[in-house]
Image (cartoon, rainbow, N blue to C red; front, top):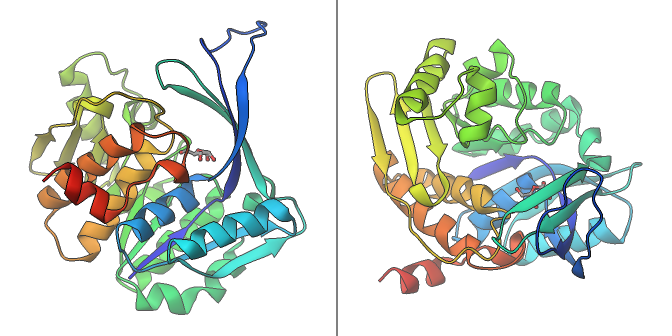
Length: 300
Ligand code: RIB
């Protein structure tokens, strides 16, 4: 079983030709409301891939909150520990351009009401699970508390450090697997990544800080896995990208499901690359996440 501690957002999405520059106004095509939020996307990805998942988080007492919880329930997620807060449900304003790349502004709302007490109340779930997965769209002190709690119970912890923020020593020490993309790795390591050597150098900086295992997601280029002794590249898939929103979330979800099922890290990363590729081929966050059947069918 997997526990996700994280955010839920309603994504308000419009399509633009080119992402506007600072001070520029542009026209958007359509406005879709799509369930999102990094935590909820990762939980939904796991549910669609037949993982057994519970989520700890918060939504507002409003229509968006109800829709987001219903959507997770449909994907088989246990939402008993998604509580309501006084603040409104988190919202993300997303522009997707013609290349499928996005720009996102998150208004955290209820996500910033997730508290240490919520983690204590969800303790029995953490105890029963094998893996705890979290991200950085809830207060950092709660991320740290959840990771520590999971490690006290001897659980495997995965931190997707997104959106990028500097991490405390306590957070890093309690993470088993860190899963940044290149931009996040640059911020965390302080190494500017221009060439392959830089990537390895940045990874080494993270190892020196106490990270045990690292998977750097490289978009269609695949991923780099590193631990203290070895590193290995995994190939990605070149597909027509319609919308990259939630691609990283789907990769994290897939990794957790595979590891929870006892797969090796190699098998887990190969599987996650397939799931990530299928995610960018569809529009939206949770609307783009593939089911296990779709993955098996597409790559058979
Ligand atoms: O990772 C994609 C997600 O980031 C979106 O669904 C949006 O809600 C933001 O949290």
